[in-house]
Image (cartoon, rainbow, N blue to C red; front, side):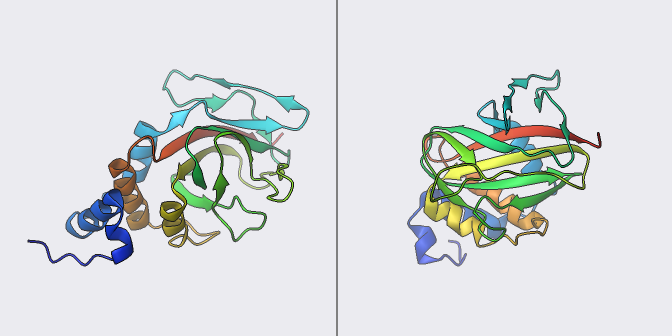
Length: 200
């Protein structure tokens, strides 16, 4: 019999309860989040949209597609998500092997936002539904993006563990992997996208 402490709110959800149990019994494995994203992430449902110019993804030989057009530092863009799971969406950006929470709210503090089924621009103004434009100013090279969509309660629990502007701790990422692996594909989906930013 396990003496693992469990929160009453977590007991209500089987897949989160399993995460709590396994979190205490299994040590963190470095790089597990990246491996899970590579295995479970769905390419082709998250796109980059450049104002007045939209392109599709091409498939690379290593099965990790990169947006076909490199984006110049400072150029504006937004994401367009094609999603089939309702709830909330939480985004992460990977650069040089480190994952960071990526704010999707109308400010740099709110990380998660409600997510509808169908097409949705990210980030967007909640009052108008119009996209909020993004730009990368300082970091050329490959950037990976992951959009986690699931029940709002679950996404809210993970959002509370993240600090905007700071890399995500490996134990938090590994716990998220365990929760994802316990959830069904009808409850949680992980959308992927890779982009290249250039100096000019």
